[in-house]
Length: 227
Image (tube, rainbow, N blue to C red; front, side, top):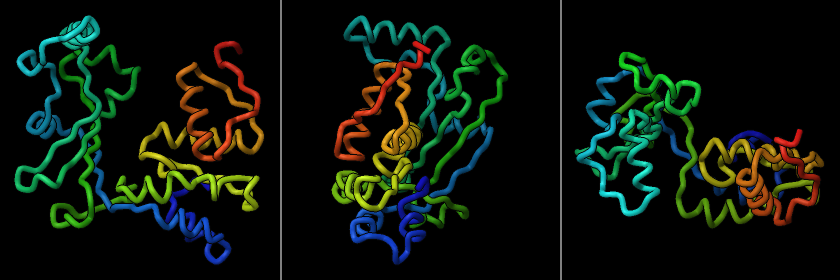
């Protein structure tokens, strides 16, 4: 079921097991708003989009020195921004530079006049006086890691009488990578081979699979580069 936890619970209705009702019902969501825009003035006013030497700390090792040289060489391309509201430090917003997220645009970062696509997220409907539209977003409160994540194995899989796999970023943390890897893990739990992109990806997959199914992946693993 590649839907949010609350949607999965609603779809199952009276057919949900006690474990499914407990785990799926414990995932909490907030209603946020996302604006997709090209407002360079807004970004410049609220965030640091370009490298500023006076804000950089002194490097403490060769790795940090290399990172600073990379940034100074017009390759500084931040993807993720956050800020707190001066009027209320408990409220924050996030912005993504969608253009910097996409590697095919990297050669153009240093060019002036190149238009970027941004997405700005205004969090939590309880501050709805600040905005008018919303979307449904997973909340990372302590109950998520006490009542949802450790118990996925109770509701996942062909071996637990439900014959159901749950897929989505809500199964761990709200990241695109988790959403994708959860789908791969579900396919592998149902009998598919695992095609590993690299050792890092394979390690991530196996750890997620262990968490989601309370068992190690015992199927076939092939390296993508070998094919």
